[in-house]
Length: 123
Image 1 (cartoon, one colour):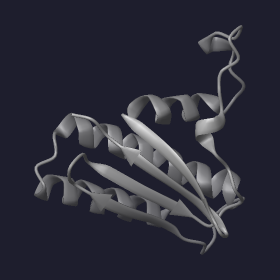
Image 2 (cartoon, helix red, strand yellow):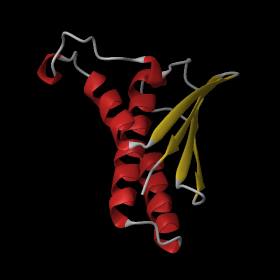
Image 3 (tube, one colour):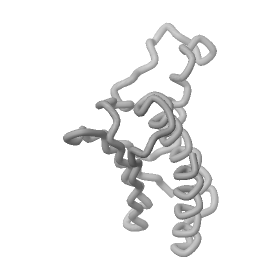
Image 4 (cartoon, helix red, strand yellow):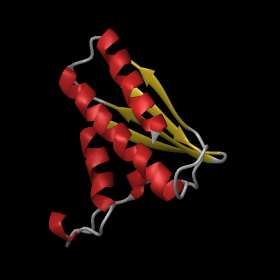
């Protein structure tokens, strides 16, 4: 998890340098923490030396490109069944809804040997 803490520090420093709104930075940090911890726990099956890569783009809208080398998984394809309420979600699926809800736009791109999410944050 050292990589997570380093990524979050770097994300916060870059956003501060670019003068990104603090509320938007908070949303981005929550999203990165959720994605990173899920990659480690579910994608990689635990702590390991496999990478998680973040690329930040400040303009035109703040965007994070998140990549891992885990088995293919598209969080954007998950939908809450219409007859289930928030309290009835299976354990773990609330995080996917949170990530999608905190982003203005999220696009999944399968990669050869991994996943890429393009996460755009609105103003």
